[in-house]
Length: 149
Image (cartoon, rainbow, N blue to C red):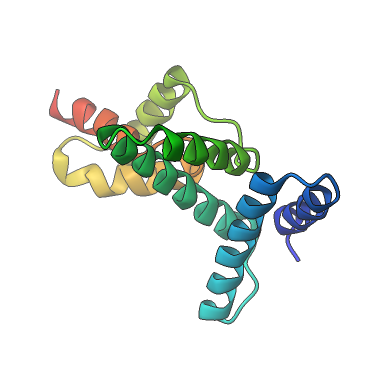
């Protein structure tokens, strides 16, 4: 069993003992999503695959928050924010804008990118290093601005 999954299970037990309902519900949702992926692929997931799942769950929560803001549903916004905070505990430290700029510059040099056709090469170089640590949409925008200038 991966270290991250073991940590999540231990935190679930802790949330049960301390009767933290929202945290427990969120952790159970995380574990159910991980288990579903393991059943679908018929193999146990490693930490990297689990981080991808958690990153996707965070993205879903952010999208829900923006939709609930448009609908003026403050009660649901607060719940989604609380769930997002619980999930983010398991993700690595996010990259700062400066670190992202350095990573993009490094990728541009490494892949010898010169035009928009090289976008895929640059993204595939950056993705393993930034997954779960940066919004890939933001990274994509940075790469596009570098390649178009």
